[in-house]
Length: 331
Ligand code: ATP
Ligand code: MG
Image: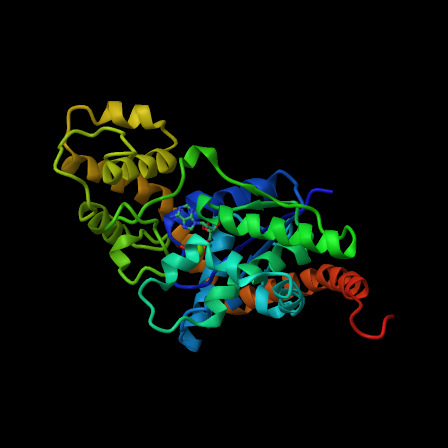
């Protein structure tokens, strides 16, 4: 059977890269009646230092945002990773099948550790936990942004190793990547990098909950080049092309149409058009999320119910895994 699983870190606030690259797809899959499980991966968030109060707040904010964009707890399982202990349990078993060499080659690890003097072990091994997230739910499809391809490959690799050693247990999952996106949404401050929640400069991201004037300010200050025409050249004109990408996805117009409509204006003026499309698209989402946030008890109850449901399924997998690996005294 088809089982869809995906996760998002409650680090900071959801940005439009997350939204356009992954979350919109989450909603589409849910609404087409698929078996979907969505996880707020809080254990992944603590791979970098987090303030406990802010982390809790982020989890609720993210839940409110997910509900506001259309995640429906009646149609999907939404839960916090730390409330389903089987994720951590399987993580250990998969760690014992992973090698240091394989993990150290992952590009996200290289990126995230560039500026760190001391590298936390969790940051090094978190792709294994990510594989456990996917495998403990026996997911077959994983809707993610293009930056996650290597991590999904690791999950496939670990599933194959486990199946080979202990007998077929896990399906080989596949990444579902939106082809419209043409890769990933780039940082507004440095279009050679992807937009990232963990980027310390808030001007690099448009957050889904940003107020209209903040969005306008960020788009106006976004880095473009010294050519004034609006053209789509993703290889050479990264900044403008990123804006066109965002504009197209937010407005539903094709990139060609956006270019055509901007024929008589320069990039400076064009930024106002982009900001307008983004603001219009995000307005109802922000308002909806703020409404949900007025009722934290409801948000907590959604995650609790999702956690109970997810635990049941995950426990079935763990009973099978422990049996196959020979752990414990048997049942
Ligand atoms: P962090 O910097 O903390 O890793 P992030 O912005 O990468 O945060 P994640 O929670 O790691 O966010 O990823 C959530 C989902 O969003 C993943 O499916 C990821 O592939 C997707 N995603 C993240 N950044 C982008 C981006 N710039 N463009 C498209 N998709 C993205
Ligand atoms: Mg990430």
